[in-house]
Length: 412
Image (cartoon, rainbow, N blue to C red; front, side):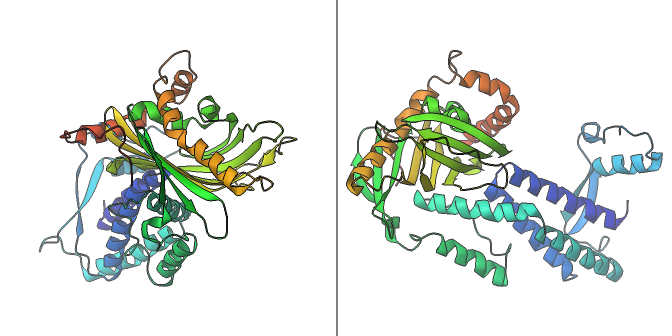
């Protein structure tokens, strides 16, 4: 295998890892991976690489061998070459006198690196990553937390970087506001509620946070199975999963019951989950949509009124094997302009305040065979098995706490 083949193999493995992070909605790990790859490729373009390629056999080559192709037309030498590639583990190591690249090799590597960099620039997953990053950061700001690594400097540069940062500011009217404008509304032994008036509107946004005495393993099915929300979400009459774009990206229609003589309110929503379990968090961004490129939205049922959820989301924080902090934020227009604004704000606040308790109550019964979640977990066994392994990995890493958080503790 030539030196060029080894570089190709290393870059391919990096792209594969990056794509896996993006497809599994591990946004911040993907950003870190992409930045490291882009940084390395830029070094190679300058023809002054600080790392070279060395190879070693994979620890378990029999587990990584290329499966026998269905077609027998592939030549033996091609089949053997493919098998050799997957049996070789490639890593970058510091240069020495014996493994320095020649001038010709450096030039070839520089040209290849430019091609790889352009490939990433045109990769559709790159757009997905930038979109999910923006949504995720706005949601994290609403809960006043900062990821340990969210920067895109080094990943983006010049006009593109300026455009991304400008877009973030334009889409977030509270980005420079101290405390993001949240004011304490209510606090009890179970949760804390804040409110905020939005620019150009008399309607308030509300945020609730509280600690649920239940495992993240039991909370996840309640949040993940969108078509079962009507079993626990306050006042929800129906919920339907219209499309699963990826396992953590869904298009959902929900209907909320309103007292007679008011019509039911219907929401068409796009929900994107973000796996930030490396920092003990799961986030879900939610916003209303008028149309979708992933699915044709059904007609609005006769008599229902389409309401608007401008932005909303969940923050789920793993505190211990038996405790989870749940936070929910929503800016909702239920399209009842004929009612006094103060009454609409009270109704919204009351609904939001019920979220933490409702999730906790549902999670405590999630393993009851009489409840619908057991069957869904069996249907989506692969998803739950994979996520359980990730969550268990984080739970094992938790250090013993001197004292558990009190029932009334909450996020900022």
